[in-house]
Amino acid sequence: MMNIMDALGLSIPVVQGGMGNIPTGRFAALISEQGGVGTVSCGTLAPIEAEQQFKEARRLTDRTLAVNVPISVNAAPEDMIRLAARYNMDVITLSAGNPAPYIPEIRALGMKVNVIVGTVSQAKKVAGMDVDIITCEGYEAAGINASTEATTMTLIPQVKKAIDKPLIAAGGIGDGRGMLAAMALGADLVQLGTRLVATREHPAHHHYKAKIIEADESSTKIYGRSVGRRRRLLENEYSESLRKEEERGISLGTYKENTDEEKHLLGAVEGDMHNGFINGGQISGLIDELPGVAELFSAFRSEFNDSLSNIKKL
Ligand SMILES: Cc1cc2nc3c(=O)[nH]c(=O)nc-3n(C[C@H](O)[C@H](O)[C@H](O)COP(=O)(O)O)c2cc1C
Image (cartoon, rainbow, N blue to C red; front, side):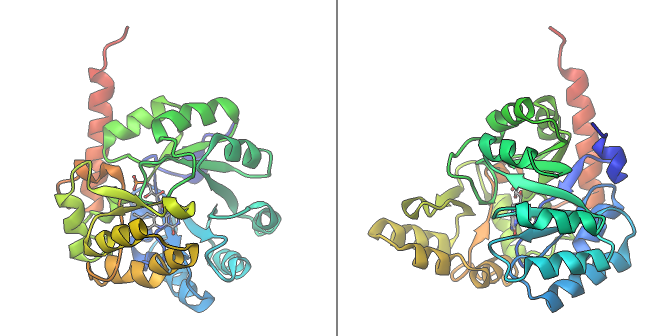
């Protein structure tokens, strides 16, 4: 099996997760310049909007870049894939839908295929396809969660046992110790969401970053279970109103309206905590400062090495 750090030219085993319509071109380039995998996020962007982000990212780095295409969310996944190839993106990360129809074209365009799964059975199914990397995301994570509600701690070793592909662990990783733990369980790389939102350079609104810093381990809640969906939100005034509304009973249509990208941008980028939601993982409780990305990665390296040497052999 290929060494994925070498194959992607990384100096730290960290991948930035996709982030809806938050404009991530510049931020993705920064992550890549710091030795990780920056991910330009397509969300529900139109091709012309996504292209601006691809262009910006490629202008700022020639290192490894990924593009997150959420299949059932974006209206034109094929266009996103073709545009990504035009800007020499290296990896297409498919989420939120059946990846099979898109894989041949990604391959033909010379890019690597990474697929996000949330269960062991999905991982097994995807491993049978022509994919390079599988990302497995646990229930701790910010954003959309799988229906089995299995945690990263339990999923990663089970997926590792079931598949023979490079594996990225996502959900609940907030420092170098978490990175070490995920790698001890079998992950080759780790994907970060919440931890990267709470950095100086991330384009999220400072109200969002402040919510992460104020959070403890109980400050995120799942919304949507009653309609068979799961999205982990950091509590704010809007999520409180959603919770009350769900208790009274909502339809799937209302759930979708309440959590559409417009409400996400209102919360995450405009900082409107009354009318918009903010995704947040359970690891928010660990995060209490807003470092720059270079400083964060340097801390990850020392925490990883320190905890590795502090662990006693049995
Ligand atoms: C603001 C935000 C938006 C997200 N949007 C997406 C998305 O569009 N596509 C996706 O696959 N995952 C999305 N996620 C999930 C992340 O990519 C990542 O896998 C997750 O945050 C990892 O868990 P953590 O927050 O515990 O680190 C989002 C997460 C955040 C924080």
